[in-house]
Length: 289
Ligand SMILES: Cc1cc2nc3c(=O)[nH]c(=O)nc-3n(C[C@H](O)[C@H](O)[C@H](O)COP(=O)(O)OP(=O)(O)OC[C@H]3O[C@@H](n4cnc5c(N)ncnc54)[C@H](O)[C@@H]3O)c2cc1C
Image (cartoon, rainbow, N blue to C red):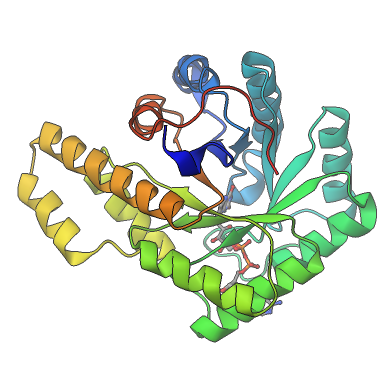
């Protein structure tokens, strides 16, 4: 086992499935991912309100199927103070003790989010209403949020979320470890001392990762893109190179002091379980910080 791994927290992100096939795929994934005993699962919340109940249902299902905690993502898109407050009450009643508080991405045609414009306002609201009932996670962007006017503004805005009461952060995925270490150094110099856990996107389908990256601003290094594109339809080579690349990234992050890893599993078990085993991460239950 990697020595740095034992004291850290490792978590896994899922999304609410659509339709019977999606449900079946999630059930299958939960059986394998639950066996890893992650510190917690998290479940995304789709913009536009389409999966608000889907997130709650998937959180409940995940906790029941795996016996592990599950944290719903909650965004500022749509909703009133009352409706967001009701949702928080429902989460509390369902035994949820962690929330990933986000601004969310605006659906096309929507200029303004709902009652809160930015995640720091949502964090403030949750803290005011629920005190320390929930451990609050927020998003972090080592390669900067694509809409931020400047890196400095983005760091200022991250610090604002921490000052509002965030307990820890999960990053957007990235493939440059230096971007993460630089970000952590910069915010620590600003007095931030909460854990900032790298978000890890396994690569098994390069086309898909490439599309996601174009949307969220994650940089794919040129040499990686060239190699991946050079493999063309050779899926085995894409997977083998992706596995090695992401393994090396995780090793580097843990060796450099990252407080854990958060895997974007996309409701598939295999890429995450493979990395988990390659990295020799613990499979006995630990509690998240
Ligand atoms: C771990 C993780 C999980 C995610 N899960 C989901 C999900 O489930 N559903 C979903 O829709 N999206 C999700 N996203 C994407 C996220 O919603 C988008 O990246 C969104 O555009 C920003 O969300 P945020 O909470 O980081 O926003 P914020 O921290 O509010 O930042 C948004 C932008 O506004 C700027 N900003 C922040 N605060 C202020 C302020 N007070 N004044 C002026 N400017 C400000 C920031 O610099 C940034 O450019 C996730 C992202 C991450 C990292």
